[in-house]
Amino acid sequence: MKYLHLIRAALMRRKTRTVLTILSVLAAFLLFGLLDGVRVAFNSGGTLAGVDRLVVASRFSIIQSLPESLVNRVAAVPGVKLTTWANWFGGYYREQKNQMIIFAIGPDYFQAYPDYGVTPAMADALATTRTGVLAGKAVADRFGWKTGDKLPIMGSIFPNKSTGETTWTFDIVGVFQAPQAANRALEQQILLNWKYFDEANAYGGGQVGWIVAKVADPKHSAEIAQAIDALSANSDHETKTQTEQEFNLSFARQIGDIGLIVTAIIGAVFFTLMLLTGNTMAQAVRERIPELATLKTIGFTDAQVLALVFGESVLLILIGGLLGLALATLLMPIVTEASGGMIQLPPIGSRSWGMGIALMIAVGAIVGILPAWRAMRLRVVDALAGR
Image (cartoon, rainbow, N blue to C red; front, side, top):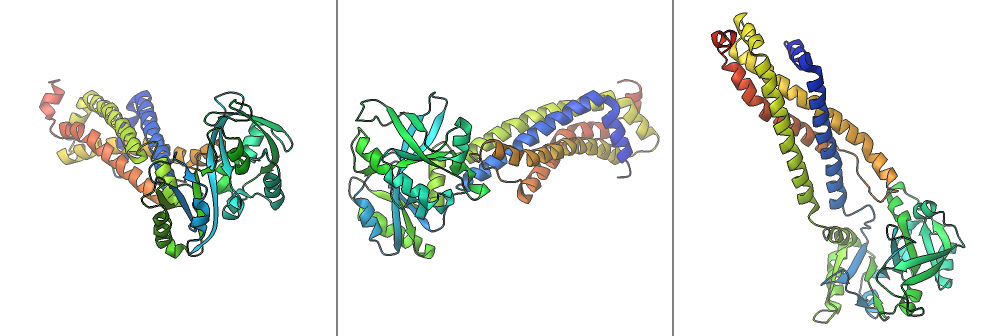
């Protein structure tokens, strides 16, 4: 701290260069903060991950369906107190850019998932209206839908056998709103009556996408999962039963190894950052060779000159890095809100801050060590002579 004013003066010697370098560091650590949030969000398995829910899906692929008859057999497994099921229904509204998240759901779905905030009246309306759908508030507000509207959806997977086309026309019987802010992503979904989907689906009926089993005691989930999988062992529809969190994680991994992708991006960003800041520090030291020689002449030791240049490098990275992480902290809730809950970025915690600060010091040390070493070994006579 004794020579902090000298470090500050060195940084302000070329204000434009310093500001641009700080902005580069800020951008790198802003990206680090946001991508680390993405990694944590994917690895958490999502906000909707009930500890008492097991998901029964095909062992071979999430896109391979299961026979509806398996539902009653799963329900009979000791420890299972409720079963329901769902199917993915791919489609878009008006234009392909308006891709919808649509599920055909079975009975008792909202007993298994109270997280949706669907009222009993809405659930009854869906069950009694053959072509009925429930729309989440976020997606309804986005397109101006309301209860009673007709909703044409262009199916991207399942054609409607009654029309021979991929266009499905539904009736909106309710708009639901998730009671908890953490579950706002659910409001991007559209839920339709599975019975209608099963009857009108041109690819055949009696098939479900996955089964949800609500267990009486989550402590016995592992044994219950084994018992469920034993029901279809050595059949053409073998299952893999997982907790909801594990199922969500396996679904996310179909995109790729998020941790590896994030690490690769951050690695490339920081490699570029080190080249940039390393060049900046080397240039700054070259410009100040006479000044450094003067400091040695008036009594500064080699170690003190090394510490000055080294401290300048670390401080430069720390300023930009702390600003970048602070900005990422502010942007996390804004991104979550702007996405309508689809992207649930967690706040930057102490672990991320600690990792970020350690990276700042490490980058500052790496880019500063060579210029600092050169300054320490500088001979006063050669420097003042311009050699």
